Amino acid sequence: MARRGGAAPVRRAERRGADMAGRARRSLLAAPAGLLPLLLLLALFWPRGVRCGYHEKRLLHHLLDHYNVLERPVVNESDPLQLSFGLTLMQIIDVDEKNQLLITNIWLKLEWNDMNLRWNTSDFGGVKDLRVPPHRLWKPDVLMYNSADEGFDSTYPTNVVVRNNGSCLYVPPGIFKSTCKIDITWFPFDDQRCEMKFGSWTYDGYQLDLQLQDEGGGDISSFVTNGEWELIGVPGKRNEIYYNCCPEPYIDITFAVVIRRKTLYYFFNLIVPCVLIASMALLGFTLPPDSGEKLSLGVTILLSLTVFLNMVAETMPATSDAVPLLGTYFNCIMFMVASSVVSTILILNYHHRHADTHEMSDWIRCVFLYWLPWILRMSRPGSATTPPPARAPAPPDLELRERSSKSLLANVLDIDDDFRHAHAQQPPCCRYYRSGEENGAGLAAHSCFGVDYELSLILKELRVITDQMRKDDEDADISRDWKFAAMVVDRLCLIIFTLFTIIATLAVLLSAPHIMVS
Picture (cartoon, rainbow, N blue to C red):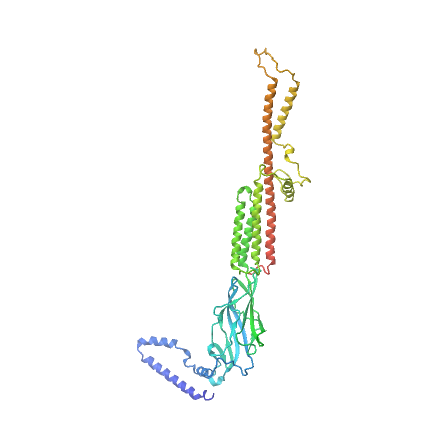
């Protein structure tokens, strides 16, 4: 060591450097004017360490000429090599829910002590540390066990910083693609815990002892915020596992990246449109059935919800372990809209019924014309809301209604009674003649039975007309009853589906672990 670090070689090297510098200055002064700019550029970009790298060069020869990269650097082969392991999480690049992958930008940090890389700084010009390529040194074969990268090890081989006491610091950066079990139960109000397991691929715990560098876990001081995920923490844990095959323990360091999804994007792009579409389905019950748009509106809303559900399904993994919360909510709203379409069909069916095709039964009349209108505080125009009767009302054909047909029928009955009374007082003669002296001519003879016959025909025609008018009024009343029943069902569905939508929305929001993370 003393012979290598003597002063004579140093003086000779300095003397050679001075001679080279003098020759360079003389060549520069003697050079033609055209070469002067080129020489200046060479002087600017010439490496600065040419004159000051002698001690490092000598130290590298001293350390690496007889160094064996396969040798585990310990004093006693039975002793384990202590390896301090940590990481710095720089960025979450992507969370692929479909393929259940986590892509991160991480800097690993490995520290160990190599007994073969120690020197006295005074013997080498005060050099305290060196930068050595990792393939020139022994380094631990620490890999990520759950790596999903095509090359498996995605770290960049940076230089190892070696200090004079033998301490080695290796900080390889890399884009890590690791497997992650995505739990979609509370999507989009979910938290994910993605583990990254690091350990030696060939050394057991008796040869390489991994120690967690920081008990708090990974370093997140330089983390770049992500627009979709909020980082909760990166806790770490040292695991010592014994397998059935081997008596030696195998040590690994497992870091868990705990992240929380930011729900602002999903809230305003999926949940709010879904609630608005469901509200449009509710407003469909306020449309009159004669407009012809009730059914088409419900079908259109059902198709819109199907599109939204497909958007959610495209981002979720094809797993049957759990159903996402948002998918459950969309299915509830879709069930509500589908039920509203069925209810709309029933309402339109009731609205377009008439006496020729359907007869209203007593229980339908009691429920939809009396009980439900009284509960819903509905009444027909011009009538007050009254409690339902204890029994079903009598059929309409048992009483005469207060309409034009009743007055006409009353007049016909009066004429019939007068005619029968006058006919009963006439003598039982077949015919008689009366001569008129005042007008000077005899009136035509009329048979009493002829007058009776003509009046009977007139009365019969009036009865036919009156019966037809009464039947038309009854048919119109039955049609109005069906239309009012349709209005009652419409109002009932509006109230039921509104309550269902509100309860489903509140149940989804209140059951989530967290509602809003901006």
